[in-house]
Image (tube, rainbow, N blue to C red; front, side, top):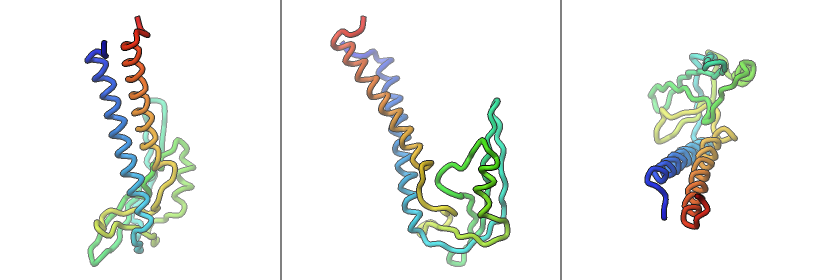
Length: 160
């Protein structure tokens, strides 16, 4: 006596979704970690603003930035502050995090030497970079536990 096809596909789907998020999270952690070793160059911030996003009754704010920099006589434009999400429901928190940046002022830009268009202003990891990995792990683990519980329950007659 096994699981029905429908429930097996359901658990398998959650398992795959969790695994996909884990892989994406691991890639993000890896990229954030290696960005600490990227070369840095002076750049200039050309645009800096706070974007307000409203969803039903909740409001969130996130920074939007553009900066330009020159690598090997080629001009590039970047827009990544960090590898983690800097959005918040508190606008003053975003304003405080942007105080270190000022339009038309020089800024250190870390760029990927094998792909100079890939850049970041704040390299490295923090808790925000790890969230997709742990979120995916939780989804994957729940799917695995529920699948095995259902399998064992049907196998040993724990269900009616």
